[in-house]
Amino acid sequence: MWLIEVPDIHVSLCLGLLPDLPKGSKQDSDIVATQLMFSSASYAIKHLAEPSDPTDQYQAGVEGSLRAYEALIAARPKDRQTKLDDLVQRRAAGTLTEYVKGRAQQSCKK
Image: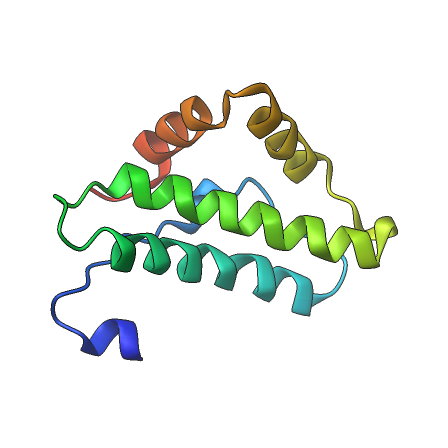
């Protein structure tokens, strides 16, 4: 609610950036999706003085979701998800930004 009520912080959210949420427990899906919002909001707060760029927020959101996913997998390796593992590999290879930009164009409202 706080993000909605604060007038000078604008967060661009797009769940379509994540290919598939973990299929382990519903709680895992909620954690990964919620982290997308929190990481996007954190980016927006840290960059209040800069012009708003949804793509940068999307990137921060996906990276935060991947960190949450990795923490979940460390606790329960059997809950691995191939498509999220692919995003982790893209991040390591330096191609995650390209993925986020392409996915944002396809899945996110302007």
